[in-house]
Length: 177
Image (cartoon, rainbow, N blue to C red; front, side):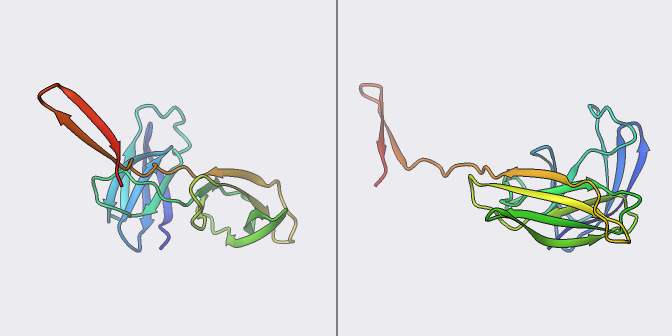
C-alpha cells in the first residue's frame, strides 16, 4: 500500500517534519540509504547535518516495510518525487513502453506541494523511463519532468562450499551442487 506524505514542515535549519498517512509499517530512505525501518508513526522529524538547502526538504522516500527490521533490502520499485506547481490542476505520470508514452495515473494537485508516485515492480537490472507532466485547469501541458530508473538489487549469495584443512592450513573453495 502507498505511504502518503500529507504535509512537510520546516522546523529549523536542516530539520523537517514529515506527516504521513501510513497504511502499514514503512521504511524511510534518502538517496539509497535506509534511515529508518519498520516505522508506524504518522509524524516523523528528521534533522540533516549535511543538508545545505534550509528551505527545501530532502527527497525522502517512504516505502512499505519489507523484510526484517535489521535487514538492508531494496524495493524493486522506483519512487518518483517532485514539487508541485501553483498553476497545475493535476499531474500525468507516464512510462515509456514499446516506443510510446503510456499514462500510468493522474495525480490531482491538492496543494500539498510535494508529490510522489511508486512505480510497478521492475525487473532486476532493468531501466525504465517516466515523465511527470503538469496540466492546468484548461488542459494545457506544462514542462514535463523526466525520470530514468535503473533497478539494481543485491546479487544472490554465491553457491559455494568452503572447507579448511587444519593440518596443512589450506582453504578449499568449491562450487556447491
